[in-house]
Length: 331
Image (cartoon, rainbow, N blue to C red; front, side, top):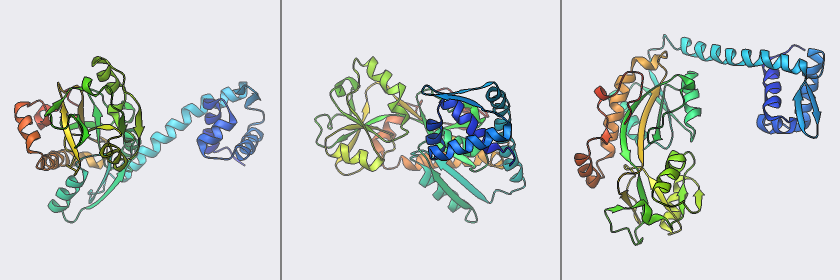
């Protein structure tokens, strides 16, 4: 039996978690199976890699040596696989577009426009709540583009070396039941929602640090937060059990209303990302312009918001000239 990369991943997982049991859970294996695998690895390498007791697993001197090599080899092999995937597609005329999206308000309209403009295209989509997962798939050549959003001035992780460009910047709105006492207002102060319970879908960045900071500036800490899918969020709001943050292009739904937060304490930036060395980079500008057009289509059901945008030109679709190549303009 020869040492393989998967064995090195096992050793790293045990060292990172400090426990065979925790490593087994991380790797999706049964603990006895991982213990047996570790024993086989130790036989290959000629000695124990970890000292194990009630406090967990700590690398031996041999284990430290193996870990030092593994932490060089594993990222190098991952980089090789990613570069090979991109090179394998370098001669591809890009007769297909593979999009990943995180709760994107324009993905459907973007696909519709691209399919109408280029009927021969094969277009596929992939949904995830994780921006990092999508970025990793793009970096590895498994997706061509990621369409996602970030809150405030945040930017996606630079780890995956993607180019990110702004499609649009919107104020974050609050979603209320039509029967809510504040539903008849044009704007709602965040401080006036201090007694509300909240609900969010997974991966909603505005319920991270920037939402907590906005509430702190308004003088309160948010009460109970539910987490469920988008349909569940709408049901909880309609039932009067919670209120939610939502994007400005949220499609109107019977029984619910969206209202602007006074002073726009939260902003949502819609981004399109791709890898600069991938075939997708050759068509990225055209796809970006189509994404901006899809965003404009999404505004049609929102005449009040369109009127607001005319008075607030820093929001809405972002002109291409305002975005530096390969980067994200700071809003």
